[in-house]
Length: 473
Ligand SMILES: *Cc1c(COP(=O)(O)O)cnc(C)c1O
Image 1 (cartoon, helix red, strand yellow):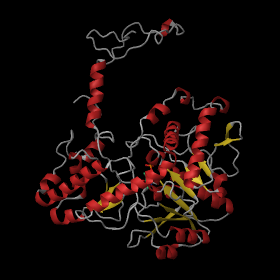
Image 2: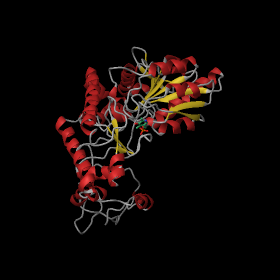
Image 3: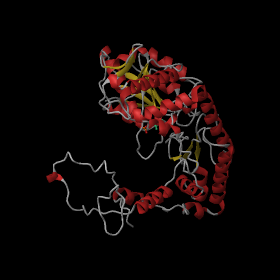
Image 4: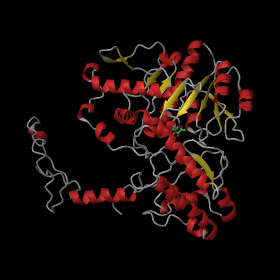
């Protein structure tokens, strides 16, 4: 082993094996004869630097992470080992015959997703949920173009995730909002008024972003189909329904799933994701190419779809995430059903424990998440939802999603997931109740939070405009 930097102060971090330094094949005139003089610290100092950074960060391994709509569940560590297996480490431009194992995994994952969604065709290409939405809306657009129908409107509930209108708009559709009713669900009467022959589709999330199951979904899908329109299912939050129902049974035609939420890939911070899109039989011809096929002997990538929208991503998509998702699905098997049951039970447990201390605008049984409001604390004590979120960080808890969905003022959107023990849930309840009490008796304590984190209240504008990215203080 050699240190090619030859620092005299003993700082040494970059070490190469003799094999790596065996550079006989490079012409001598290209080889360096003196040290590079690049800055370097010792291996120990480097480790300390990264350890310090990771200690300052928050993650699911450190504490409760009830970030609504993001499904921050536990991602089994064995998935990391599997995704790193040598055999899966192939060049993205592989030939089919050299990558039968990887293609088999993609094929079998697609079959599993068909099973879980009830759909007939799958693309694994999209890189994230929003990318899946874009892909799905491109499919819907091409479907109507091929039929010679000029439908240019897409209906979206006012509770929808912001990516829904953005994706439909990027495809050139005009966005029409449909109101929510007093129960927080799509207002069917309003929908009937909006529906006309220009409507291509409705994009729905079910359970919706309030964590409520849309009771009228069958009536809505009948209305849409009678109108010649399609239904898009935002399946980013699939965690509530696995094994109990599926988008096909609800009457949907196109679905995207966030593998990085429901199917256990570490996410957030802009990390890699995967948003496969599943479609009904009559839309299969519009899927991106290639699709993976199996003739009983060999797995192949097929490009011969009559009306394909083309490629939406280079190569095969986020392959390592597919490995994690497939491993998770195999590991869970029919227990996926219990996963959803536990996720729903945990959310309802927290909702019932907290609804006395915070306003619960839609007091209904919830699915995987529920939305509280900090309105009482704001009106009475000047303590806003943002203050409550920051104070939670002092209790070793990641804040919930805040100020979303937009139809709830001072929203706190809480999704515990199935991974947590009752003890953790109770700890969170205690912290939330303590904060509600503090807002009443010592509001400054909440308003000035966080008090115990490495970085206190930050100037968010300055942090975005002049980020300090150096490790030197
Ligand atoms: C997370 C989420 C999305 C977007 O998914 P990304 O992978 O972040 O693009 C869309 N819809 C809902 C309901 C979501 O929760």
